[in-house]
Amino acid sequence: MEIGISTFVENTADPESGKVLSPYERMKNLMEEIELADQVGLDVYAIGEHHRPDFVVSSPATVLAAAAVKTKKIKLSSAVTVLSSDDPVRVFQQFSHVDLLSKGRAEIMAGRGSFIESFPLFGNNLKEYDSLFAEKLELLIALNKSEKVTWEGRHRAAIEDRGVYPRPYQDELPIWIAVGGTPQSVVRAASKGLPLALAIIGGQPERFVQLTDLYKRTYEESGHDLSQMQIAVHSHGFIADTEQEAADVFYGPYAQVMTQLGKERGWPAMSKAQYKWMRSPEGSLVLGDPQMVIDKILAQQEMMGLTRYLMHLSVGTMPHDKLMRAIELLGTVVAPAVRKAVGESSPIMN
Image 1: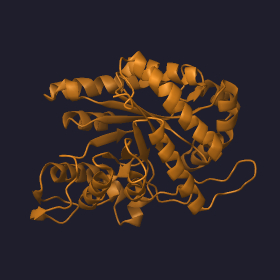
Image 2 (image 1 turned 45 degrees about the vertical axis):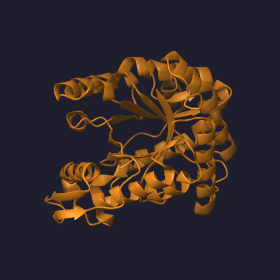
Image 3 (image 1 turned 180 degrees about the vertical axis):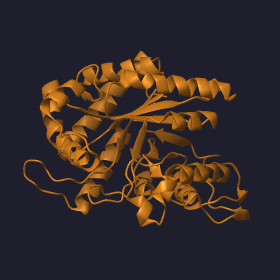
Image 4 (image 1 turned 90 degrees about the horizontal axis):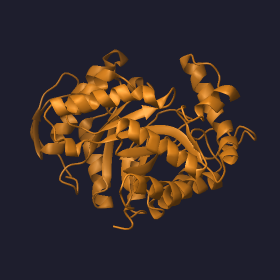
C-alpha cells in the first residue's frame, strides 16, 4: 500500500497573527516539504490546481518539474488537474516533461474540479461541466496510448494524424480519476480501467464503501484485470507527537479555511464540537498521534480495499516546522507500520 501527501499549497492568513506568507516563501517551504517527503520514504506527493488567491499553484506540472530534479524516488502527481478547463494536449506534454525530468515518476490525477474559477478564466461554459471532462478525458487517454492521434470532438479542434511530443519516460503516464462522491464518475473510472482517487472531506468514511464496491464491481464487469485495480483515498489530516498537539495545531488553520468555504458554499461555520466528532474514530479527519493515524488508515484500507492513501497536508497555512514534523512522522512511523500491517516493505528497503 502506498502512503503519500496531497496539498493545495494554500496561502492563507495565520489565524492568530493575520500574517500571510509571500508566494515566494510559500513555494520555498513547499520545495522543502517535498524533498523531506522523498527523504523519509513516502510514495507520492500530489499538488492541486487552483486559480484563486488563497492557493498558490495554478500549474501543478510546473511545480512538479521543479520537484523532479530535487527528489529521487517519490512519485509526483497532480491533485487534481482540472481537465475540463484545460487542453489535453498541453496536459500530456507538460506531464511528459515531468516524467522525463523525474525518470518515470510522473502521474496525472484528472478531475472535474471542486472550484469553478478556471471555467470563465479559460472561456469554458460551466453548464458543460461534465461533457467537457468526458470528452477531454477520451483525448488524454488516446494521446497517452499512441504517438500519433486522429481525433474529433465537440469542444476542441480536431486532430488529424498528428504526433504529440515529447513522449514520457514511461510507456504510458499513469492517469488516475479523482472523484468527490458521484457514482457516475466512479463508473466512468472503472469502465475505463483507470485508478480511482476518492476524496473524503466530511462525513463517515464507511459511507464511501458503497462507491468503492461500485467501482470494484464495474471494473470486473468491464473485463479489466483485477490485479491491476487501484483505489486511493485522499482526506484531510495531520500528525504530531501527541494527539492534543495535533488537534491544537491543526484546528485554527483548518477551521478558518472550512468556515470561509462554508460562506461560499452554504455550509455552517466550523465548530469545536464538529471538529471533535470529525477527529473521532468514525469521523473523516485522519488526525492525531502516529498510532491514531495508523489505526484510521488501516481501518479505511480494510473497509475499501485501498492500495493508496494520501493525507491532505495542510488545510490552511500551517507552521512550517509543524508541517515538516508531520511529514517526518508520516514517512518514518506511519507508513512503515501501515505497510507492515498489509504485508509490504518500505520502497527504501527494496
